[in-house]
Length: 243
Image (cartoon, rainbow, N blue to C red; front, side, top):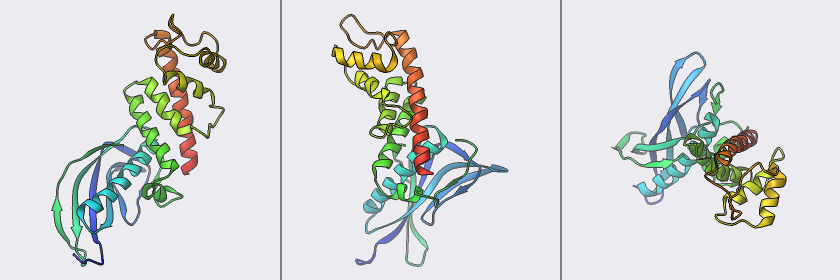
């Protein structure tokens, strides 16, 4: 290895679920793995990421950062929670020949009928750079995991962080609901009043000690409705931002 030039590394990642697109295009250094299953139908199963690094750990750190953001982005595009697994890596010598290969494992958290092209718009920048928007994408992926497991309170907390500070589509009412769900035990009267103003008096039920009743069937049913409404707002906001 040259002390003045970093090595070239390729890392191979797999997704826990397939994502269907009408067409698939990657970048020079990020290639999407997919299965061609018919006309205008490709199933993305993972991706290859090429990076530079003086050591394996340095290169792996960069590749993992890119993989996490790419997985969050694919989760948004597919509309479902995704995980990625690092299944192998290769160091490439200056002549382009693969000289070292090894399989390893590592787990990390990560809409049918449309194409995906990582070279379009801001997608490449989102994958390779940390930003406010990439953090919002990660909260969306976490929210999708909560949706898969029917954890409505966590859905509201995660999707709220997607829209926090921007509040599209008159979504400010979710601020009072997030605040209520973030506090356990007795709530201040003004907190309850804000919730009643935003959702209507009697919409949610409280305990005899003015706490939010997390076990109330009525509240669980209402949280299911509101969490899905917030998810739709948050996902639409992110899709509009990246396209």
